[in-house]
Image 1 (cartoon, rainbow, N blue to C red):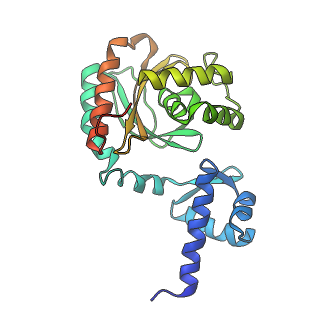
Image 2: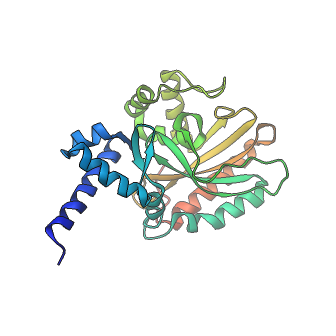
Image 3: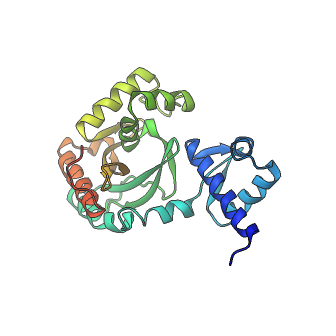
Amino acid sequence: MPSNTSIQVVERISHLLDAIVSNDGRSTLKFLSADTGLHPSTAFRILKSLADYGFVEKDGEGYRIGRKLLHLSRHVRGGKALDTEAEPEMKWLRDEIGETVNLTIAQGDEVIYIGRVLSKRMMRVEQIIGSRAPLHVTAVGKLMLGESGEQGCRAYAARSGLVELTHNTITDVDTLVRCANEVRAAGYALDNEEAELGVGCIGVPIRDGRGQMVAGLSVSSPIERRRDEWIPKVIAAGQRISERIGSSGDVG
């Protein structure tokens, strides 16, 4: 039988992880201590142990959910591993259009790249696995913001400040709201050199059996090579991945 002390530690871990998630995936020690009622030194010790095992990560003055939990979460989407189910469709899409294909999920106010199939071309776009980008500068991130509605977009803008990465980055909240509504209705989104000059992307949602957007599929290429005729193929690949992890295909 587990000791009361062991049970208490598990309970505290649960409270800390819940607090991080409730604060959009990133929280300071001061906030976590106040939210959980734990003494700062106690919260710090537990968070340090969680960080040692990859369950949380230190992020400046705060903490966010770690890659180990993100990795584990990818294996419970409808009982199937998201990256495993996505890989055949990502390879198909890469071979169809000849460009790099990415798989991303949201963590707080960022997308994180969890999978990719590289273009075979010498001149190609490569996103590093584990790298992150603000939601509003990526095609998939715009779709995720669209899922949150106008209130969610405005809250995101207030938190993030809509940092400008290029002269094409959306930095006005009303423009962001309008864009988020448009891409949600269209079922796909574009990144027009908003994260990096010279790079263009096409993104589509991946949905689970409840119709919730749990990830995104995107194609990244030099902007001059991107073609609108790729969009139906990207949408089709995203829909097939959604079906593989449990989506009925009836959700928009």
